Amino acid sequence: MVEWTISIGNLLTTLLSLGGFIFATFGFFYALRRSIDMTGERILLLSGRMINVENELKELQKVLVAMAVQDEKMVQFERQIVDYRKSSDDFCTWLRNDISKLRETR
Image 1 (cartoon, helix red, strand yellow):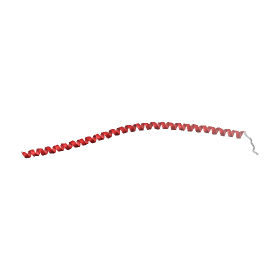
Image 2 (cartoon, rainbow, N blue to C red):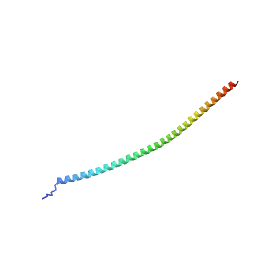
Image 3 (cartoon, one colour):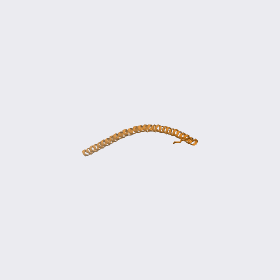
Image 4 (tube, rainbow, N blue to C red):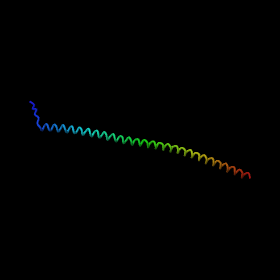
């Protein structure tokens, strides 16, 4: 036969175990909720930083475009200088030839 006797020690142990389990469950869910809240805050912080990085990248893109435009203008200016130099060299050559022809005719 099974003996169903309940002693105060067994009852106290059962109640304390049940209370500890309930306390641990509440502690676990509180820690879980707190962890989720902290993760949400971190995500918000990171999204704010990402927005800042995105804005900085836009500014850098504008600077790079301006530098490319300036570089192209410098290349055009350099070509112009080369053309002017060549035309002045051609003019000097023509002038020397013309002067030498005039000297020969004298």
